[in-house]
Image (cartoon, rainbow, N blue to C red; front, top):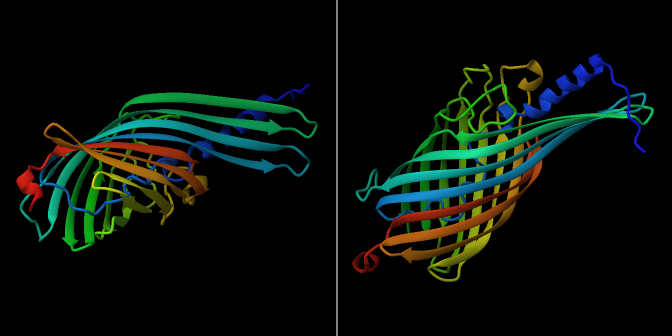
Length: 326
């Protein structure tokens, strides 16, 4: 039978204070503007001119733990768990006329989602007693807005891309809650991508970028600058079907500032890898593409670690036979 320890009010307060650093992981609240893995295969390949619509479903489950032991026995174990589901809708337009000898695409991503977050702590005493506490919260609603622009060039089997993306804090945000679907601050992200796609059916893509986070005006907290690399490799068995693998690395290159001094020096990082599959088909006058990829995370520091899945459906105008022949 488990023995229950009698805990005084001052000790209970100490436990609650100790829980705070767990939820305020690096990149304020453990969340970043850039979703690691959002680029994969064919990232830099030019698309067809005209309007397009992309729907991306994102699922994530992750956790983080921290603990310490006391010199006279016992210890403290803290935990953070999160589950997220988001829908990202991106209407965009690809220009037919070249811009700087490349293909210009402009789009904006609207997002909505739900986040379920909990923190917990277990205090073990020297006499084998234990005290535990847990707090949970859920939030749902409209998330932030992400305008984006890209330029792509194709030279034989080589495809090059440069992009810039902003993050506007229009989403549901409350700094006094554990869960939230908005980040509460502006940010800007820019980078470059490369895709090697010869006629053999093999393809490899690399996309790298940097995120600059502005100060959160509500909390006066500023997340550090983030670096990220997304990679994808695939083999196309036909013009409509491919399989492959994808991965990413995400890491802060400068520390957070502001807020509690204890949190200011934290830098986060995480890596992930997993399979991907894609299928193209036609729906009437629309060209459709379904892509699914999943990542198992590892090597996390000061950031929750778990798994995530991307399911993406892209729609654009189907090319007429005379256009395909060009």
